[in-house]
Image 1 (cartoon, rainbow, N blue to C red):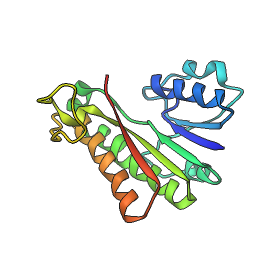
Image 2 (cartoon, rainbow, N blue to C red):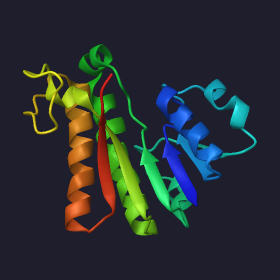
Image 3 (cartoon, helix red, strand yellow):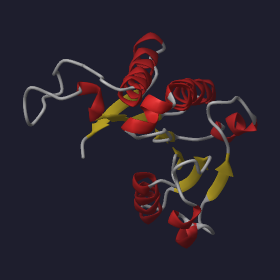
Image 4 (spheres, rainbow, N blue to C red):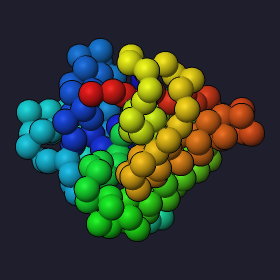
Length: 171
């Protein structure tokens, strides 16, 4: 099996890469290192293909999706305060980037697309633990952009019968 992990140089992404390699999955990482770190992948550098690219901008990276079975999309700008200070950057990375990755994956006919969403879309929830069907109340540009990315993914799943799912992570 061949898989792409976008944002694979980040904390969660690099651990996911490790787990996939342990399962003998052929892994490619797409990352622009805006938040991820090359040293997170140093110990597996010879075992993966690493493509440095900006997913918010169409480019040659689209070709990497050919003959890929799974895409795990973790690439995003994440943090509340910087998103208030730079909302455009968060929209470009988290919404435009997700759209571009979705289109590349759909065009290539990937078998599974997994989007890593954020619990921040709930805002400050009324119930703990927060149920999945709680009201969406994104309070910051980061939360809104991640929710918009999730909505894109689920819309593609419905409209295009695209094999996608979204996982909302909590910390």
